[in-house]
Length: 70
Ligand code: SF4
Ligand code: SF4
Image (tube, rainbow, N blue to C red):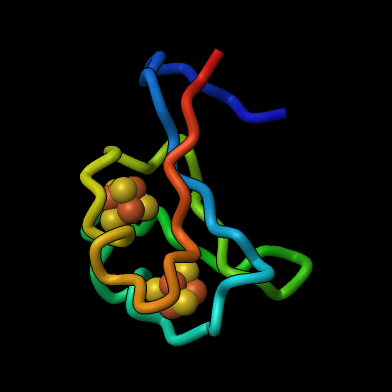
């Protein structure tokens, strides 16, 4: 269940299969939205995320995916 209190039209999500765990997204994020989840994969906290796309631009492996919200 992804909480969407701000009703953004889209979200960014990290594809764990594509992620190389380089930490570039974490370093780029100004809102501390990138974290390591309990499966030890990088993930994005949707409540902190401002949808700025800095993480997506920084990712060398295309692992940050833009997904439209319902
Ligand atoms: S879109 Fe921006 S705010 Fe959201 S996780 Fe990526 S860098 Fe952080
Ligand atoms: S920048 Fe991309 S490859 Fe690097 S940790 Fe983030 S999602 Fe994974």
